[in-house]
Image (cartoon, rainbow, N blue to C red; front, side, top):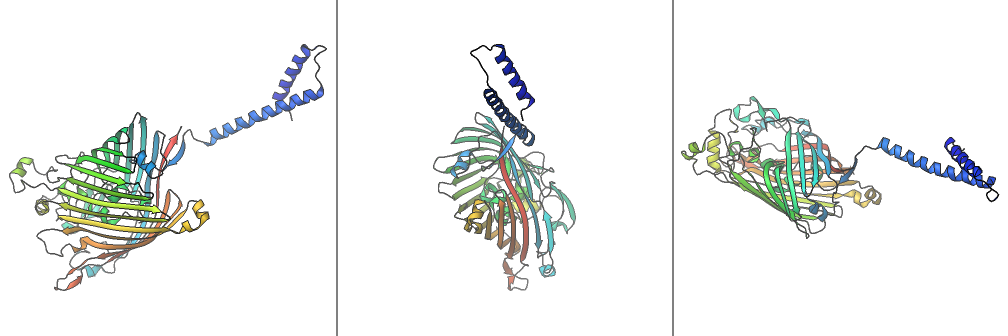
Length: 504
């Protein structure tokens, strides 16, 4: 049927032809019908285009999201070296998060590592948790300038907690971990001069070890972050500092960082130097300084090899005593130098993922730092515990994607890994002036078996059974054997990690 708009057009054309008609101009009914069909066709084309535009406007937001494979903090050359898409858009948003549940077939009583561990042999407990929920935003201003921010909510978003103090008779105590309810994990400004020279300043991740550099939950198999590195050094380790980094065309990537030192007041036996990062105050003390570095090689398809390290003093990074007081005491020459060396690697190809890491750390003047911390007054920031001179952690995991055997599942980009993992770590590997086996519970082996199912690239469903095997030692009766109960655990989780660019 011809619309009113078409009829008006035809009448106008007919009147114009009639007004100027003479013997040489004649309009037949066939010509008129052809004209009507052409007008109808034109109107239909315009109508369909307008309809499509209106649907797109109604159903689509002003900004269209598109996933990118490059992680925040990873420069474009690193992404390209791994065969990933290089982002060209200015605004990036994303993050990661974990929803977890576990049941532990051992006790969580603070005395379970005491003189009578048999008392707690048959205890068990469970937990539901949100270990990490992170929101990331970044923007490219152009001319080499960019900014990145990352806000982290740990265990539901608050960083204050009620804990049972092992050193104070098991009394309940409120603690503030980092002086706020939400942690600003990253905030940096960056200037890229070229691929070989990038300068970044602000709060940023210290990429020492495999876990800090690759801490998104889709980048490890376990429901929780691997226990070794997570126990003895900060995770995710972030400080305000200055970084110089870059990449070469043949797959080398490098970072060198200048940052404040750790605070030895807060070192302890269970976590070695981990509590010394960040600050319990409204500012970060910088009485001493440190350096960190990382080198990655990605020149072979599917393979990454990495070396990283950290070195810096820690003892005078405190408010407890002035430099004049320390210089006049037995602690005059104490530096508390923390040195950490680490190697990690990853292989991902042909349906196989293999990852591993090894880390060794040394703290100079550990015995004097222990003496100093134990003597601090009650209510200080110190846990008043022994700290080791040496700590170590090593682990390896391997998984195979059984969906890679099915062509249809490969086309759907779904993955199903069956994996195994082994860890060994000891936060009190070496220490002075104490009985050999007093802190044997700080070192252990851990074995795990589990699955990772990825229905889509950004979402993972995880399950694992792990078994913590505590070290043997000399019992009170002089015999050697098991000192503490082993620690089996069943855990499940669902995780997310994704970063997106927004197109205008």
